[in-house]
Length: 374
Image 1: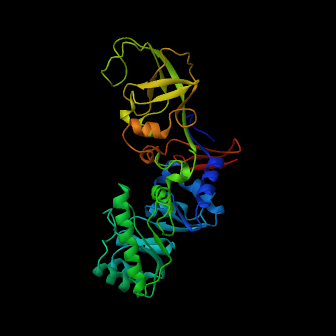
Image 2 (image 1 turned 90 degrees about the vertical axis):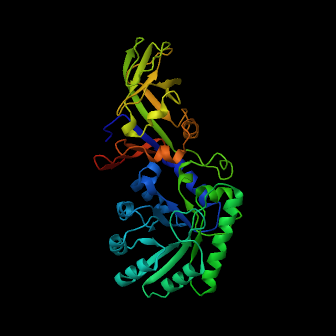
Image 3 (image 1 turned 180 degrees about the vertical axis):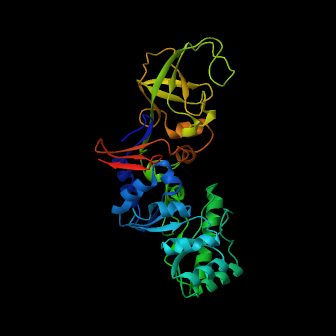
């Protein structure tokens, strides 16, 4: 059931076309990343939809609670990319999750609990998690590999994606270190350094298990958009809830006056839904094919748009992005951010409507904890 006329519409036909395009572009196994609620698209539904693809071996998430959320809906192995505190390791192990580590002390804790699969994180230059390649780290990995209950599934890292020069340096560092590990009789299946952007940008980088996230949703970088062609799957929709004639005193929280604006429409969406407060005058919404500029400061639950020159009625549908409206690429450029931030911060109080063959397949309302299948 749809409890609110503001929702994120997701086209599953487009999603599956994107996934097939990605999988057909390489012979390797894949890891698909569903962190941040599947980049705002609903982690449980997307995980379920990916079950049909045998080339997707691992579903990756960032946190333990994300892993727990999908453990009963996915037929893939689940990998936790983020750091787990010592006291959380047992929960992850008992649920058979693949754990990211880079410390011998954690490997020893895991070894005492149960047989477990791990990935070792190498810091090739991004400087977030992992350790920088060195003889000391190499010896630590050798020590980890000798623990009887530890199965090293793979070694991985992440490119900075700043320039070809730096990315190539990181790639060479990573490949060289992986070779040293193997030369010391440490066995592992995967060496993974490519995310969605790197996978499209550097097809000649020879690694395994690319980690695909935003690309499956058609959120490719504009520089890579023609290399592996995917299409945006999402449209954010709301409705007009009021029509107001305004005077020179202005409206809303802003003290700015808009002398040319004679009429505004109120939309049923605000910053608590994930609309950036700085969006005013940097974007438009599409109502009856009219581009209506967002004006004033968004409130928690409402948004104002200029309809002075258009015939707009209460109840009309308004598109904030996607479809024939503003693209996420355009919006992210206007706001000097990136598409992933905009889509992943869409609030859980916005329902998600999943369509297949132009019919509703699921309605997900995370706030009330309901998933209806049609």
